Image (cartoon, rainbow, N blue to C red; front, side, top):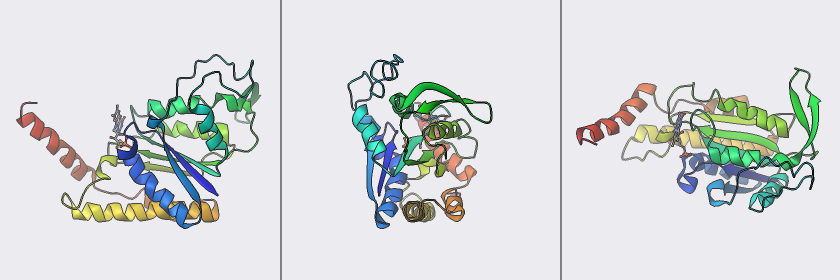
Length: 243
Ligand SMILES: Cc1cc2nc3c(=O)[nH]c(=O)nc-3n(C[C@H](O)[C@H](O)[C@H](O)COP(=O)(O)O)c2cc1C
């Protein structure tokens, strides 16, 4: 059993995304899985050129020579694949979007109609790994992920079942708070990390994550007011210094 996460944060190993991913993968390992986190920022991934060579001239193979062919192999060789991203401009990072675009060689030009009237391309690959998503936003509240939930569409493109788990973590910039700053919040973050470990374990053991665990993953870390006060305090200090 192999669980891979592609981390689309430009902050890579220092990201809040990584902070979440490492706990989830720890849980997956405790349940016996082999795991890996791929930091997309460390990879050579060029833009899709839209040349469609991967559909016509060399079906299934992209014309661009970079790290993408190996990453697609890694994707296909996994049982569970996660995509992690911070919210950027209400959506995923350009890094992750670029990575997703490069999966075009896995589909064909053949257009089919869904029962709901929408359209899709026939996939070249018959077996896709199960997928999950991990997003975090800098804002508090629940309005940060509306566009990002279109992510769902991309997962659906690759698996008719859609993602088996979606984590939409607000107040992401609070995740790496230290005891010196706020011990009560650090304890709450500890509970959140326990929930991430549990999600990783359940995914590997049961093939899905229970509703109770999903609810825990969306627990309030800190009130909107406290989070705003903390963020704005730093800003006020900068204003005082005339910056
Ligand atoms: C260019 C840019 C755009 C952003 N846009 C949003 C946004 O639309 N909504 C939001 O809640 N946070 C936004 N953020 C904040 C990030 O989502 C937040 O800092 C997040 O915790 C970073 O996660 P990471 O450490 O995993 O990269 C933005 C940050 C940057 C740098």
